[in-house]
Length: 228
Image (cartoon, rainbow, N blue to C red; front, side):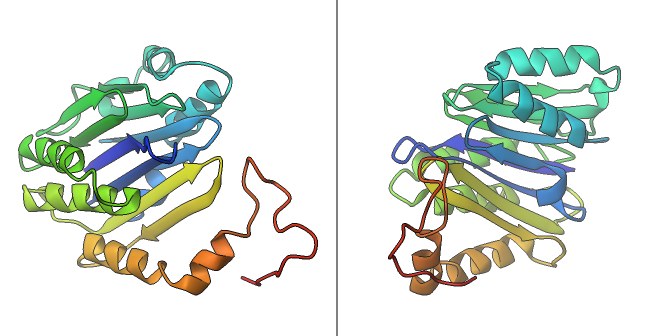
């Protein structure tokens, strides 16, 4: 019912994900990210939000993506109905696709990039997301992720069509970037439109002043403060 991508941005050290589905609220259901842990995309026929949250907890406590995936899958008798993609803070990845998920289903994982999906028109959707992200290195990280899921839509998409889309990016030196389209006839286009609206100088000036993991006391005393 979903296709998703998790990626590591070598230039900034940020971790991000994007997803789209033919159901409501993909951002709330699928994507989780923590700059001190990594990212997860928990999806499938019967997705487990518990997997997504527990994966971040385990990786924050030092488990690798592979160790975390193995522990979660082995402990859940419903794992055959679920799909999980993980990325730890080192950019290491792991992916599980349960056999009871609806075809077409597929995942591709390498260091710094993992793409997965189920209920797709064909596995070409995953290949298109993967190859488009790899070929878009000159674009900003946010645009690379959106372009990747646009390619997945163009390659066949969720075979029911799409209803929601989301983008989530975290980093120790930046504020979380969390955009969600929970219900729309063209959710990926709406997501790109929202992202473009968020590029306004005023919004970016505000983002540059909010606390981050590496600078939790922003703005420093005496600096201009901007209200949300």
